Length: 211
Length: 328
Image (cartoon, rainbow over all chains, first blue to last red; front, side, top):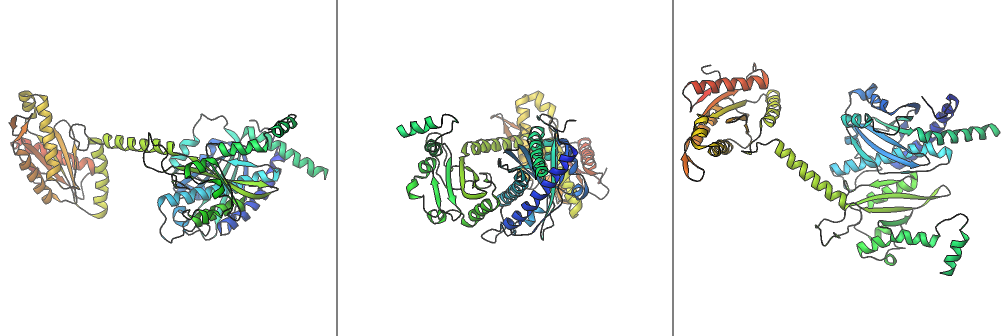
């Protein structure tokens, strides 16, 4: 299994950088959403994309119906991100300060869908920018789209017709203050992106050593 | 022109697009581009937007976006833009949830429709020195996607309807009946409602086919389906179960009520009708009725009890209704 030059030492450094980036992301999110955002320490693993489906079957997620939004990104790093929610999210979004509707009515299903897509876009954007920023790189995003529920997510993840199976997966669990829904962001960086990450990590480590 | 040429020559070492040409591109590109600053002042309004809204850049640029376009969903849009400035991140809207940002009337006078232009929007933060100086809203015409999605949805709905209907009679087919039966059985058990089932077929159907031909046979089948739909309640489900055999499901109905419905149906079918536009035909049906009890063995049990009752009707001389549990 190739790791595109990422030694355990570099992987550790990357983990540190991602931690820092996520801290900043959490602060920005809290400001944008109007509620405190609690982030678990992100995990960074070199793994197979097909293993992501297994993450839906562990811990609190195993018993829940889920909803997933995906969003590709490109530029300095190219990859794809996925945000997963459990079904409580639908009932807990409407009164989020950053999203509350102008008239106090029940949101329509299109409004709910739009809020969910926008929330995913905001959180994914913060995470991916959190990963890119320490390297002073910038990324652009394609529109987020709904993947559907568990069966649909499994079907997408088990496709074999993709260029890359191996890559880095950054996994961050989120909690919003006063909300009980589960949410998780997965950022997948396939092998070609890892060469750039490796270069960036090497450069940073060199700068640290020189200073 | 000469200064442009000079600029092009000057850039020859590292070719880049001169700013003047870049501005032309932004103006002419086939998407709407609108740029606003953090205070909501419009900085840019390209030709696409001019052409489609009829409002020229000079009448928009410099104005406050929300004051210039009071029909915009201000609270929502302000929040969306604020997040882009704050998070330095892209944002999106899709026609699927929000049909359009700016209402643009249908621009296809030839091939048409009356629906306004569907729009996908991308909000791009323009970052300089780590700060978002302005946000560009790129508006993409998604009317084609919308139209093909609408056609696809229509086709899928039609296919779904066809896949659950019998082509000859228009009543449900056997597969759909089995789905309904399963759902109704669970519902009846959960809410302790009655649930009854009629199974009926045309008496001496082979004689009709042999004597009058298959086309008349088909008409006899259609006649029975029509009578079943018209005599039973709207909440009852009628399905063609086999060649000349039908099943009707009566939710909320006990054995006594189902027996009355079955008798009404038997009599309605027995009235002579005109087949093939000329011959008067009188046909009869035999009916078996079963009703859900605590010990009924699910869908299978309900069907086989009705079948047993139907068999008893046939052997009792046809053109009659038999209730399961009465004599069998």
